[in-house]
Structures are given as C-alpha cells and as structure tokens.
Length: 163
Image 1 (cartoon, rainbow, N blue to C red):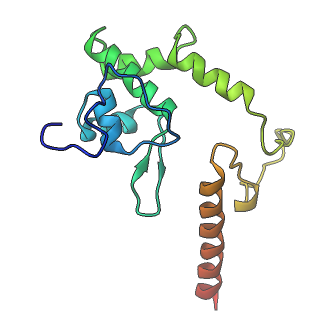
Image 2: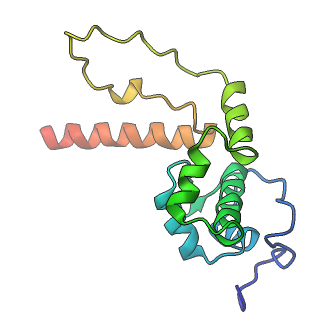
C-alpha cells in the first residue's frame, strides 16, 4: 500500500515470514498478504474459516492462522489461477495440505472446554442453547471476559425492557 506505512511495517511483505505475534491488524495483514484491506474483507465474507475477533473499537484482530489462510487464498488465486469459489473448495477439501493441516492439528491438540451432551432422541425436539451453554473454547481469555460482560449487559437491558 503506497503512502501508508506504520512503524515497523516497512519490512512486511507477502514473501517475508509472519512475525511472532498473537494478533494482527488489517493493515499488517494487508502488507503480509500483498492485497488491499478491502480484498481481505471480501475474502473474509467468502471463506467461512476466517473469522477475526474484534477489538473494543470494532477493529478486526486476525490470528496467525488467518494470515496463513489469506496467503494460501492469494497463492491459489494468483499463482494457481483458481476462482475464489474454487479456492474455497480447495481449502475445505480433505486433500488440502499445508495451511489447513496445521489448522486441523491445532484443533486436535486443544481439548474441548465444555463437554457436549449426547444428542436427544429424534422424537424430542431440543431447545436452543442458552447464552450460558454456548461454547467459547475458540475465544482467548480476554475476549471471553468481553463476551461475558456483553452477555451480562444484555441481560440487564432485557430486564429493563421487561419492567
């Protein structure tokens, strides 16, 4: 992105190694992948495996895995000449090596935070999960605190509306 550099971002590019950080802002990811931020936002909508967190100020926070997936999408589109739909299918296929394999390994190594109940018999309809039953094992601890605070705020708001 000509004209826009942030401190320390001058050495970032699609051919450089990904810095050892927990989270990346969209501008950093843009430099690391080699595409404009609006392209990243579009790919994010089209590829379900990319779901960035958000900061309190609603800025996207991408993980290293997201940057790797974006780089793989860029490679499939620009070097392999896939369409975005074809790249999405390739990323989701079991034959896909590299990025998706590392993602699968990460998921396998993480123990589930909440045990899932056995499925109900077909004749009985299960009620949707309540807010306290939703699994949050994919969220880091700081985000979990924000989510719990948001849920508490929503409960207060619902109580105030019911009065």
